[in-house]
Picture 1 (cartoon, rainbow, N blue to C red):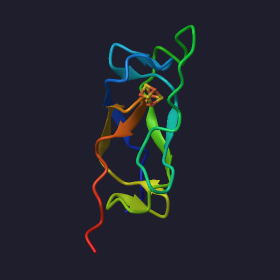
Picture 2: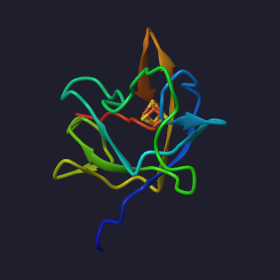
Picture 3: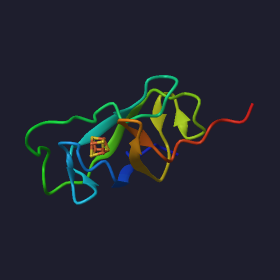
Picture 4: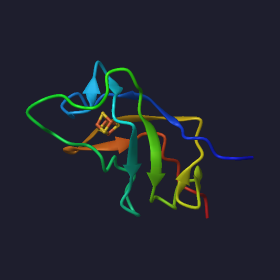
Length: 98
Ligand code: SF4
């Protein structure tokens, strides 16, 4: 089954430049670092950015430890993002059981 780009269902990182009303408005984020499922696109700026008429998706994910990761792409139906220790974590991350 072909992978389609999962949408960011919600993001509660309100101080990100791409966040408007808990929605992500960049075209696509990258998740990872290999060992930590954080939104690598998180960006604090003096102004809001992105495109108001679109909701972002997961363009790439480097977290091969996640059960949704297929060849460094995300196969989850959608993801949720939330703050964690000054950065933004993918809360849909689910470790592969070994
Ligand atoms: S998913 Fe990442 S880029 Fe999008 S609003 Fe949240 S922290 Fe910002």
